[in-house]
Length: 428
Image 1 (cartoon, rainbow, N blue to C red):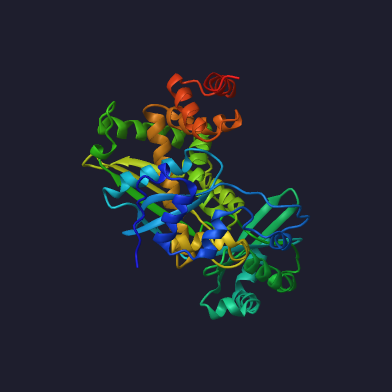
Image 2 (image 1 turned 90 degrees about the horizontal axis):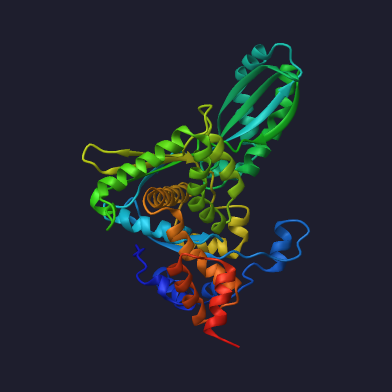
């Protein structure tokens, strides 16, 4: 059964009211609601089994982005993030996108690479041919390392062999195992396979294997999203829709040609992507590494998104990038809130999760470009940041909203201003 991802007046509700509303939408049990309502959802004993030297746990705010419609299906998106305006921007852009049918997505298969580094050969191209001649044996050994994956329809599908004939350490031959990891992120699986084939590669080439490790440039595991927005949807009281679209495309072209701008542009995309990755217990560092390497694949660091103007004047946005996410293994299965986040999203495969995640990244990018190209990024961001400032200054209860309104109206959001306002509101 589908859900309605719109969250009318959600921001005006208290956290408890929001949770109650969400629980009704996605049918959360009392125990699941309790996990979200109280701190300490991750037991210390569980945390102690996840990483080393545990002394406690560290929490991030967990929110939910609404209005997302992806391939005709409404989706509520949990996001764990500390930065204000991220969830608000993504939700608002998703609301605009709904007018034209939301986001359309697709993805390639869940294919990861493992690399086996070979050194100590004087005939690197000959070694490459030898390795390729033993392809079937290499595949057999690799697939013997994970019978469960084979049973699920995955496994090592092929090999590639790359030659680096002239490095500072001599010729280097690198074998890539091309592995279908199904609904796993796949790091442990491909690493085990790489270690398993190392001895054979040494035997048939006479060289010495060094590293046996996955690549986080998951360029065979791509997720894509696309959105189409009409000028009428983007029009504001200050700017025509056509003007907004032209400004957005100009801003995109800046990121496309200038790596200094592209770094901040892509950071804005990852503002949407990372919180979803974190909320679902996936490896956000792996996603970040792959994203930025992919943005540099032409030899020039550039935008992960593209923004164009259709013949009818509509704005077309698209994104394609590596998205190595899993539903099984690691923190995704260990962390109680990660499991709960996946339930809220109602995802059924790692590919579906990847597609939702890149759609959020595209929405976040559209929100940032729209703000930058029109009123500037600070207007909306600082209004939300003002809440943090009010809290730092010591505001509580109704005083928080009052202080925020005063600072935003004065366009002066600083701790000392908030403190002064509080002193004036509640004189000693």
